[in-house]
Image (cartoon, rainbow, N blue to C red; front, side):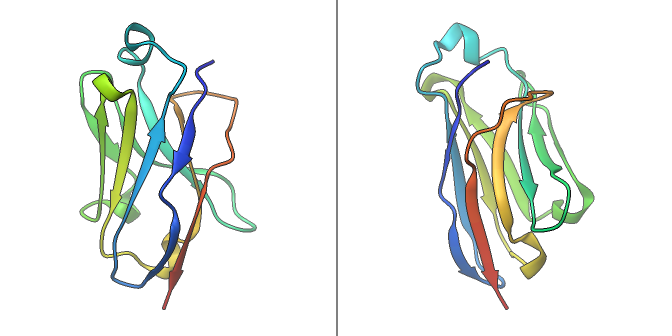
Length: 116
């Protein structure tokens, strides 16, 4: 299991932007690069949902509610995954987690709050 550390959350106004980062500080390049990665989120009282994913080759996918607004990317040389969130809505508020696809061990996540 690769240790992952999320950062970049905060308070943003509706319509604003945030960029989340996910770092794998202890992973080596040859371990991180082949991993399919994803961002998930969990709002209070709701189940954790998959928001965006990116394969080792860079193919991306998004949940319908964020398509056209969020962009997932990765920098394997820096062992990082990013989530650029634009045109944010109050319903985007949640704790955001990054993980490998199918990963079962979760970090602390980063809190995103959107004011209307």
